[in-house]
Length: 358
Ligand code: NAP
Image (tube, rainbow, N blue to C red; front, side, top):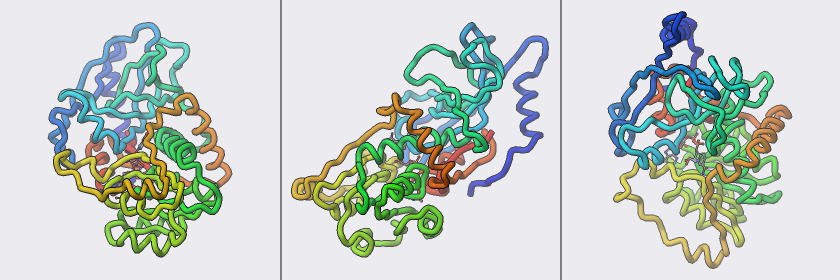
């Protein structure tokens, strides 16, 4: 189980001392996780190796970042299969700039960067698609939200739902992976748009949270219910929009109950991320449903809206400040617990956004 606690000063001091071990010549040792074996099934601890490397002095335009919060996300599981053994585990983090030779990235600022699973990183201010950005001002809110509701997952919910499902008031919206970072956010946007909202999540506790705290009209534990029966009860007029985080049989059952001109936003397929490709589940033929109900299904990557990134963050921040958007984090303490945070998220032990606090 994940432990939610604040990091203690001794750990912080030890990290500081380790990094800046001499005052005359700076010597920074970074820790990073390499994938030493491709994952098979659920990732194993031995698939990763934590190594140290000494970082060089900064060149012009470079800056040194110290990780404060790291994200663990479902996409890391399938994406790492594309990389060769020995690659750095991918991922983003909120980090503090502790040394800089760039006027654009001054010391003391927080950045969001795709630096991977590492505690110290040298980055630079060159233009690139994946360049780090200075964390916007969230006021009193935790900077960690830059990895969740006010970052990539928040923009996934905002753009992936609104641009693809285009929900209208009084329509029925179904969301799978509903108690996670993206799903819990989509459901709240759907309520703001005047929709009837139905979620599927993996425990009774999560379902109660969705109904009692997040404003969902119905929430079902997909491990216990027959989805068809559940939707007969909650979506008796059919489903207009489906935000699909999981794929598989559950998604097929939902798609089979969609109305004419229904819209499906395909965000992810976490139900099969740990599955051997040769053993993928066989799902029913959906083509007749698509034809007769004239359905539209569209996959997306949130990076499609990189040019509108700040619009998404700005709107989500506004909703939070107006009390219209709630968020929850499941925080694991300690960089050395990255693996546990990652696999417990894949197992469904998180509610809301899973992050690691360094
Ligand atoms: P998340 O939902 O916070 O965490 C993952 C959740 O997946 C777990 O808590 C677990 O909850 C659920 N899960 C695990 N195994 C499952 C299974 N076999 N069947 C159904 N649910 C299962 O993660 P997130 O960051 O919000 O991501 C949600 C989805 O969005 C993922 O598929 C991810 O890949 C996708 N995504 C896509 C984009 C994009 O650009 N397209 C961007 C971000 C995220 P339960 O307890 O409910 O099982």
